[in-house]
Amino acid sequence: MNTDLREQIRETAAQICSCMKFTVAVEIGEDEEGFLVVFSGKDSEFLLQKNGDVLNSLEYVLNRIFSDRLKKDLKITTDANDFRRIRREELCLIAEKASEKVGNYGTTINLQAMPPHERRIIHMALKDNPKVKTVSEGMGEDRKVIIMPSR
Image 1 (tube, one colour):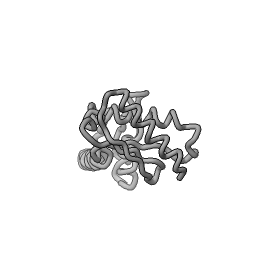
Image 2: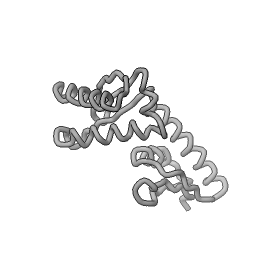
Image 3: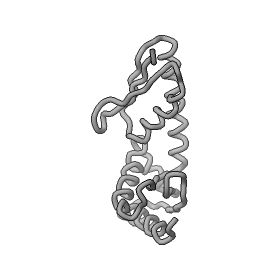
Protein backbone atom coordinates (compact mmCIF):
# COMPACT_ATOMS: atom_id res chain seq x y z
CA MET A 1 0.00 0.00 0.00
CA ASN A 2 0.99 3.62 -0.41
CA THR A 3 3.88 4.42 1.97
CA ASP A 4 3.21 8.17 1.92
CA LEU A 5 -0.43 7.64 2.84
CA ARG A 6 0.59 5.28 5.65
CA GLU A 7 2.86 7.94 7.13
CA GLN A 8 0.20 10.65 6.73
CA ILE A 9 -2.33 8.51 8.59
CA ARG A 10 0.20 7.79 11.37
CA GLU A 11 1.13 11.46 11.72
CA THR A 12 -2.50 12.58 11.75
CA ALA A 13 -3.40 10.00 14.42
CA ALA A 14 -0.42 11.13 16.51
CA GLN A 15 -1.40 14.81 16.14
CA ILE A 16 -4.99 14.13 17.19
CA CYS A 17 -3.79 12.27 20.28
CA SER A 18 -1.35 15.05 21.07
CA CYS A 19 -4.16 17.63 20.84
CA MET A 20 -6.14 15.46 23.26
CA LYS A 21 -3.09 15.51 25.60
CA PHE A 22 -2.65 11.72 25.34
CA THR A 23 0.86 10.35 25.59
CA VAL A 24 0.79 7.43 23.18
CA ALA A 25 2.99 5.87 20.55
CA VAL A 26 1.35 5.36 17.17
CA GLU A 27 2.31 2.53 14.85
CA ILE A 28 0.67 1.73 11.55
CA GLY A 29 0.47 -1.54 9.75
CA GLU A 30 -1.89 -3.34 7.44
CA ASP A 31 -4.67 -5.83 7.95
CA GLU A 32 -7.23 -7.51 5.69
CA GLU A 33 -9.40 -4.37 5.61
CA GLY A 34 -6.67 -1.79 4.96
CA PHE A 35 -4.60 0.17 7.45
CA LEU A 36 -4.30 -0.73 11.13
CA VAL A 37 -3.38 2.11 13.51
CA VAL A 38 -2.17 0.80 16.87
CA PHE A 39 -1.87 3.05 19.92
CA SER A 40 0.31 2.06 22.87
CA GLY A 41 1.82 3.70 25.89
CA LYS A 42 0.93 5.49 29.08
CA ASP A 43 -2.45 6.93 28.03
CA SER A 44 -3.68 4.20 25.70
CA GLU A 45 -6.16 3.05 28.37
CA PHE A 46 -8.03 6.35 27.95
CA LEU A 47 -8.85 5.33 24.38
CA LEU A 48 -10.70 2.28 25.71
CA GLN A 49 -13.08 4.09 28.07
CA LYS A 50 -16.80 3.30 27.64
CA ASN A 51 -16.24 0.15 25.56
CA GLY A 52 -13.75 1.84 23.27
CA ASP A 53 -15.88 4.86 22.35
CA VAL A 54 -12.83 7.13 22.04
CA LEU A 55 -11.03 4.51 19.94
CA ASN A 56 -14.12 4.14 17.72
CA SER A 57 -14.38 7.92 17.37
CA LEU A 58 -10.72 8.18 16.38
CA GLU A 59 -11.28 5.47 13.78
CA TYR A 60 -14.28 7.35 12.40
CA VAL A 61 -12.40 10.67 12.23
CA LEU A 62 -9.38 9.10 10.51
CA ASN A 63 -11.60 7.39 7.94
CA ARG A 64 -13.40 10.68 7.25
CA ILE A 65 -10.14 12.62 6.90
CA PHE A 66 -8.64 10.10 4.48
CA SER A 67 -11.81 8.92 2.71
CA ASP A 68 -10.89 10.65 -0.55
CA ARG A 69 -7.44 9.01 -0.55
CA LEU A 70 -8.45 5.46 0.42
CA LYS A 71 -9.44 2.96 -2.22
CA LYS A 72 -13.12 2.12 -2.05
CA ASP A 73 -12.63 -1.29 -0.40
CA LEU A 74 -10.03 -0.11 2.17
CA LYS A 75 -10.55 1.40 5.60
CA ILE A 76 -8.59 2.47 8.64
CA THR A 77 -8.99 0.38 11.79
CA THR A 78 -7.70 1.52 15.18
CA ASP A 79 -6.63 -0.58 18.15
CA ALA A 80 -5.04 -0.23 21.58
CA ASN A 81 -3.92 -2.87 24.06
CA ASP A 82 -5.31 -5.63 21.81
CA PHE A 83 -8.84 -4.31 22.48
CA ARG A 84 -10.26 -5.34 19.08
CA ARG A 85 -9.20 -9.01 19.39
CA ILE A 86 -10.44 -9.25 22.98
CA ARG A 87 -13.74 -7.53 22.11
CA ARG A 88 -14.24 -9.84 19.09
CA GLU A 89 -13.74 -12.90 21.33
CA GLU A 90 -16.15 -11.43 23.88
CA LEU A 91 -18.80 -10.76 21.23
CA CYS A 92 -18.45 -14.28 19.79
CA LEU A 93 -18.93 -15.71 23.28
CA ILE A 94 -22.02 -13.52 23.83
CA ALA A 95 -23.38 -14.68 20.47
CA GLU A 96 -22.72 -18.32 21.29
CA LYS A 97 -24.33 -18.17 24.75
CA ALA A 98 -27.35 -16.23 23.45
CA SER A 99 -27.83 -18.66 20.55
CA GLU A 100 -27.75 -21.60 22.97
CA LYS A 101 -30.55 -20.01 25.02
CA VAL A 102 -32.57 -19.23 21.90
CA GLY A 103 -32.05 -22.77 20.57
CA ASN A 104 -32.87 -24.46 23.89
CA TYR A 105 -35.83 -22.33 25.00
CA GLY A 106 -37.20 -20.93 21.74
CA THR A 107 -37.10 -17.37 23.07
CA THR A 108 -35.88 -14.24 21.33
CA ILE A 109 -32.93 -12.35 22.81
CA ASN A 110 -32.27 -8.65 22.28
CA LEU A 111 -28.61 -7.78 22.69
CA GLN A 112 -27.46 -4.36 23.86
CA ALA A 113 -27.08 -1.56 21.33
CA MET A 114 -23.69 -1.65 19.62
CA PRO A 115 -21.82 -0.04 16.73
CA PRO A 116 -22.08 -1.51 13.21
CA HIS A 117 -18.75 -3.36 13.25
CA GLU A 118 -19.72 -5.14 16.48
CA ARG A 119 -23.18 -6.07 15.18
CA ARG A 120 -21.47 -7.52 12.11
CA ILE A 121 -19.31 -9.74 14.34
CA ILE A 122 -22.48 -11.13 15.99
CA HIS A 123 -24.18 -11.73 12.63
CA MET A 124 -21.09 -13.45 11.20
CA ALA A 125 -20.59 -15.59 14.32
CA LEU A 126 -24.12 -17.00 13.99
CA LYS A 127 -24.58 -17.09 10.21
CA ASP A 128 -23.98 -20.85 9.98
CA ASN A 129 -26.06 -21.77 13.02
CA PRO A 130 -29.24 -23.43 11.66
CA LYS A 131 -31.14 -23.00 14.96
CA VAL A 132 -31.11 -19.19 14.98
CA LYS A 133 -31.34 -16.15 12.77
CA THR A 134 -30.22 -12.61 13.49
CA VAL A 135 -31.56 -9.21 12.51
CA SER A 136 -30.60 -5.67 13.44
CA GLU A 137 -33.31 -3.35 14.73
CA GLY A 138 -33.41 0.24 15.87
CA MET A 139 -31.97 3.49 14.66
CA GLY A 140 -28.57 5.12 15.08
CA GLU A 141 -26.84 4.48 18.39
CA ASP A 142 -29.81 2.41 19.62
CA ARG A 143 -29.44 -0.22 16.86
CA LYS A 144 -29.03 -3.73 18.26
CA VAL A 145 -28.96 -7.36 17.20
CA ILE A 146 -31.98 -9.58 17.81
CA ILE A 147 -31.35 -13.34 17.96
CA MET A 148 -34.40 -15.51 17.33
CA PRO A 149 -35.28 -19.10 16.52
CA SER A 150 -34.95 -19.80 12.81
CA ARG A 151 -38.17 -21.88 12.52
